[in-house]
Image (cartoon, rainbow, N blue to C red; front, side, top):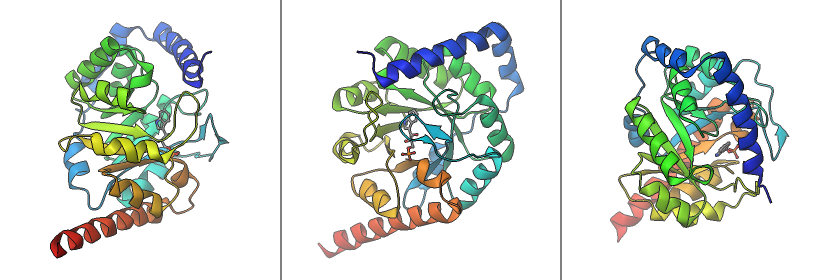
Length: 275
Ligand SMILES: O=P(O)(O)OC[C@@H](O)[C@@H](O)c1c[nH]c2ccccc12
């Protein structure tokens, strides 16, 4: 039976075919020289106080439908940056998430924060496109790629100066991700094949990520208590969409996430000192 992920990917391939027909790869590549070099998000992510927040611009999702209108993604991105987000994720998938490369352009024009192109990357064309539109990071979903393509896209991103966030959902995928030695490994609490969210996926897998790689807890953060739980499990970063796009004051919400994480760290330090 085809999974939800299979359905999303076939739509992504169709849309990609249309863009490639309009702008062949050679013409796309010639635009690379016109963009500013990719920013390195890692110093900011590693030195973030409490936890690095990767705040997502997300209009809708296959599981929940419409989440928020977001007429001006640039304005939302500015409030994310003002709240202390270490990076901003922009969903560019059109059919299920109502995103676009135009959103990425708008956000790029609005902030200097490192940007992640969040999409279902299945072709090198998309990685080049991400860079041309100003992305500094790309998401690579292990469940959507075989090892050869995963390696190729990861190498390509590195050659373009970009950072990869490699997303996993189970132990076997985590092993495949770690083989690439990426800067960031994301554990998605949502199973993209069924869309079910189980935070235990994150708390089980994060502790298996080596210290030199930043573990990113993805999905299912509704409030500061969820952030605290993920940080206790070893998250160096959290990726949050729905809760922020629905909040009238995303700036304040991000600060509350960071504060919750800082409290966990202070308690851990106090515990260690008292031992
Ligand atoms: O809106 P949430 O539950 O905070 O989730 C954000 C993010 O984790 C989610 O959008 C996501 C994680 N991995 C993905 C891969 C593709 C599309 C979307 C995603």
